[in-house]
Image 1 (tube, helix red, strand yellow):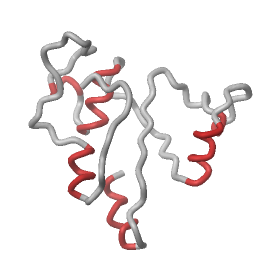
Image 2: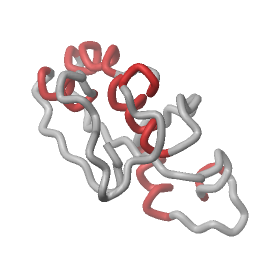
Image 3: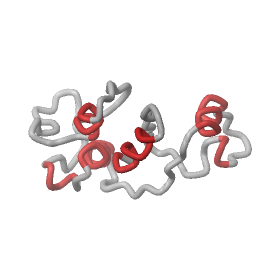
Length: 119
C-alpha cells in the first residue's frame, strides 16, 4: 500500500486512504462482492470510486494479533501480543513499533482511527 504512494503523488495529489478492518466479515459478505441480501450501499459507493485491495491473509486468528500485524507488518508473536487485549490489560503495542500511521504521517498524511483496535 505505501509503495504506491510515490507513484500516486507524482500523478497529482496523494490519494485518500481508508482501511476497513472487520472481524468475521467474509469475502462475499458486502453487497459489492455480490451478496444477495446484505445491503451495504455506503461501502458499495466507496468501492465504486476507489481501489479494492482484496488479498489478505490474517497473521493471527484473534483480533489483537491480527490488528497488530496489519499496523506493523510484523507477526504478532514478535510484537508480544499473543492473545486478545481487554480493558484491564496491562500491556499493549510497544511504543517502539513503527506503524502504518507512522509511515503515513512521514508521507504528509493526517491519520486517525475509529472503532475497536485492542492494541
